[in-house]
Length: 236
Image (tube, rainbow, N blue to C red; front, top):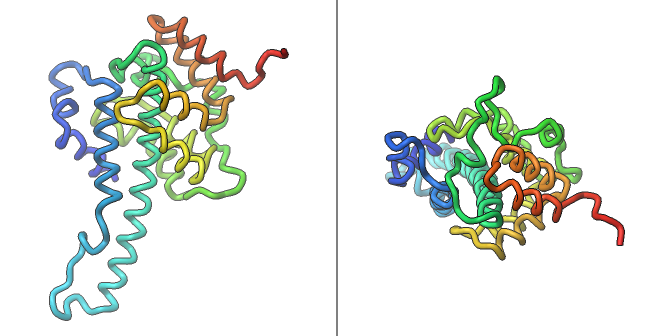
């Protein structure tokens, strides 16, 4: 997965050239790169990875290779699904508060001692270990997402972000499938609102409030958006 993640920079010029230009790529650029890699992983089949010539490898060994490859591809696909959800969440915040913007606006660190993203707050991170109640999620993927926070994104200088593991842990596979129906690339306002509506109101509210504290230029719009997803709507 680490190699696959790093390959995105090779396949997308706006990510590959970012280091020489102080990482200026936008949320939509990042979402497009993740979406393309996700489509590739959903397209490739185990038979494309390992081939057989004559009786080599032996049938039993070949079947074992295909089974293990199918398992690995399944993990990789769900992993990239979660990363697309995370990118689409950022895209939704951007498009609903003024339009596309550099990823740095939402996802880079704040320069504090913890090197954490502006979206990370104690309130949001307290939900990190909340596994989907029905258990209908791939816990292996969730553990990879949780244990690799801040590591697999080094290539793009996006600091520690728990958003992907946080959301996946709360909505599970069924919620992920539903949310990805609205992971439009490029993101638009209609899909952005549908995507946020698929997610737990409390977490959306907390993450948007956290963004409002750091993204000063969009603070008013972010606070308005956060109020829309308040877990305790005002009484009529």
